[in-house]
Image (cartoon, rainbow, N blue to C red; front, side, top):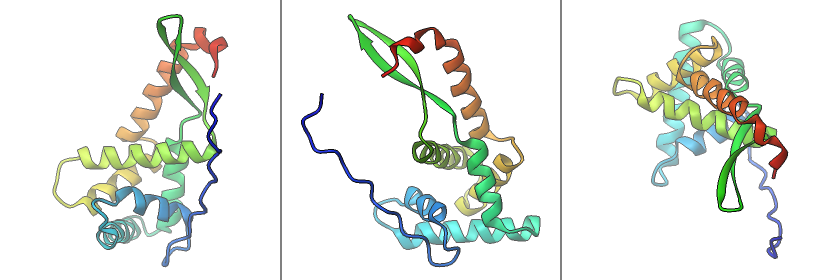
Length: 156
């Protein structure tokens, strides 16, 4: 059992334009080397491009994409008696949204092209339509959890 104090969850402030905590989470995840203005510019350009492309509210598309890529179950490594088992564990909503954002950004970075805003916009649109690499990652995690459900009794 840990002797450290439990950490308190920091409250994420909503972003300036869309008034959304999810948008702030995405901007903070895009962030590289402390360049928040660049990260926010990439995010807002992607949102503008989604709005032009679909003629719908980009925030609702983003919410739909994150909900569709959020995993219900993940695998955690559990070491028992010298062996390491992959144990399926249910995901809390905050961790699930964090993983979904992480997968969306990783999939958008792997897309061909140079403009990150366009790549992010297209990946979010694909995830909202239930296609794309982020959705594939979620399904792969669920398949692995299904394969390892024999170790569910070792739950952490």
